[in-house]
Length: 143
Length: 176
Image 1 (tube, chains in turn yellow, green):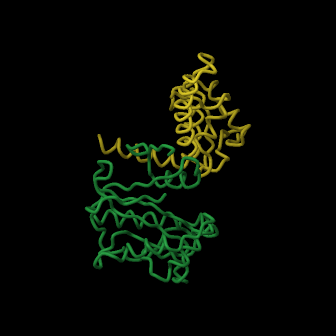
Image 2: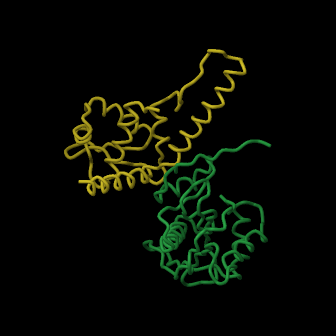
Image 3: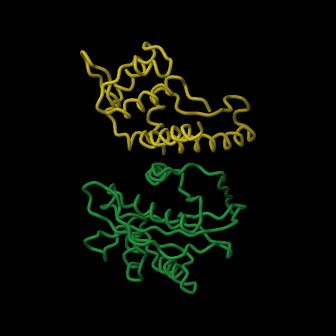
């Protein structure tokens, strides 16, 4: 499966904010790290703000802070904000609709969907942050 | 989460771990210790509180398995208690080492973990999991596994939060 760019940016942005909870981080800071335009990031932050996951602090030294619960907010919570049709894998669509063959293929595809949702719904921001820390340590060991 | 042991060649985990203090800020200190016979009543009540289904014989059987093989435990059955009230069971964890099931190298399996609802979010489950992981490690295991229902969000988040990831096996089943 592939996540939309906005979903990935939202996850990366929240990870950046969670990493430095006492600092306001700007979209320019995040954009520089991930090589993405501030314009695109601003739209993502706007959606996260409306969902109550980030808050903006205006003025000099202003930026964004995470306002959710890192131990409760899951990847699925974030992704569903940006993928309004919901997370879906391949679909059979209209082809062969009402046939047993299409129903059988639908059973298999639903199994894939259920697994994807269970995985993303079980990984919180805190868990992903810890995983990133371990990946960073692995990379250091490998060099 | 219960699994059925199918292989008699499993390694023995050795002695139950010594009591360890759980980490955790201002929360009351927790002691992890090997289960005693008297704990089984509280374990049964805790499980019944969570699942709605009392299974006294099941938990007693698991306790006996821990104690059954000539002094060397066949399983690991640990309980968590407040340091100030060591008779009270806040939670428990049960596991064992299994070898060559489904072609797997020997590894530690956790097949039951439960914490009193009023004692959750205080590091009890984390302390129990760390203690059993240490017991597996001391027995030479390099891997720990468990199984969680796909829709059991909180247990799934807990184990993920403790660093467990999806393993190389997929559970398959069929209606009979």
